[in-house]
Amino acid sequence: CCYTTLILMFARNVSPTKQIAFEFAKLDSDGDGTIPLSEVRHMLSENRRQVGLNDHQILTLLDRADADHNGVLDLEEFSLLITSARAQPSRARRVLYSVADSVIAKSERPTVHSYINEYNCLPPPIFVIMISLAQILVFVGYMHGKHEDSMSHCAGCWVHGRIGPLLFAPPLRHQVWRFFTYQFLHQGLLHLVPNVAFQLLVGVPLELVHKMWRIAPIYLLAVILGALLQYTLDPSVYLVGCSAGVYALITAHLSNLIIVGGLSL
Image 1 (cartoon, helix red, strand yellow):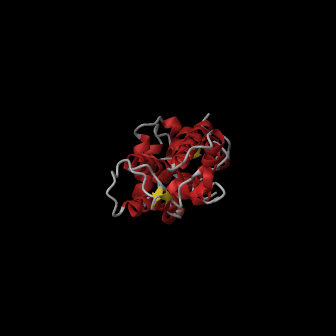
Image 2 (cartoon, one colour; image 1 turned 135 degrees about the vertical axis):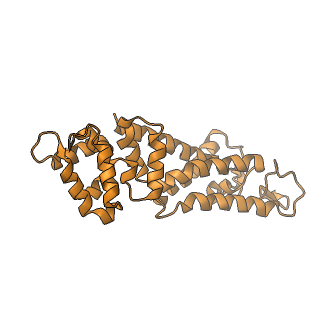
């Protein structure tokens, strides 16, 4: 097993701690519960280019890992070695590891680091950013040239004295696009700014890990179901805002924390 695989990959449905123990057992050829330091150094040196460490950095890393200086690594030392910030090829990941290590216990590092490993910008988190930008542009577009209070005016709700084309209006529920487009309208900046801020704060990190093809359906389905639920509970209410989508992102984030936390149990 390539040592870089140990550093950069964890099984998604298996506890990182158990995965590390499994990899350790494969490398512990004689079954004595230790791996010779020379063997680990050899594996690192062979994969020096992928790991991104020079010989001096490898020696320093191994010296720190072998806490009792007995020339071998036990499971705990091996676990700390492959989840060490210094062992990561990406500078950004090393920074994230170092920040996390300052506030978590050593026993929790494999779990937390395995989650950090999922963060990447390929593809970038374009869905949450684009939907937020669209909501801002719609508000600015409808407010342009108006002399209303931007803090509380529902821009686009009424156009030339008639119901706007995006507003969810119960009398016009047969226009099915309104179950979706109402998310682009907001009751002034006091409504728009918190919604956009929360969805960027929560949505961007989620999309970095879980990607657009998971986050977008959750968000858009929540918007549609929010309108359906509101109409079922009170058929007289006109609906604006992306709150349903924001609540879905927050719920997904909390669920994600519960799942990640459960892996370490």
